[in-house]
Length: 97
Image (cartoon, rainbow, N blue to C red; front, side):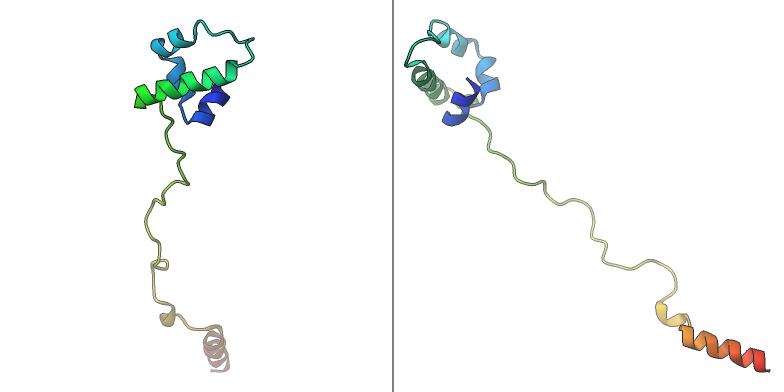
């Protein structure tokens, strides 16, 4: 039933929960040669008569969530800190004085 309902575009769980659908397939013979065709036709009829039996569309990837983190870390701007060369020059100047 799950395969047949997927081929027709029906929700198999909704069909199984439906008493009216179960009554319509109750007398079907699973050993009959045309069972799969008859089942698909019954499912198609159920979907046409009740749109709630139609399968929901497959969802794509989840939407992006969260904020944009475009800024850098907080604190002093990079220009206020001496570069390594400036640090070495200051250190050398202190050592020589």
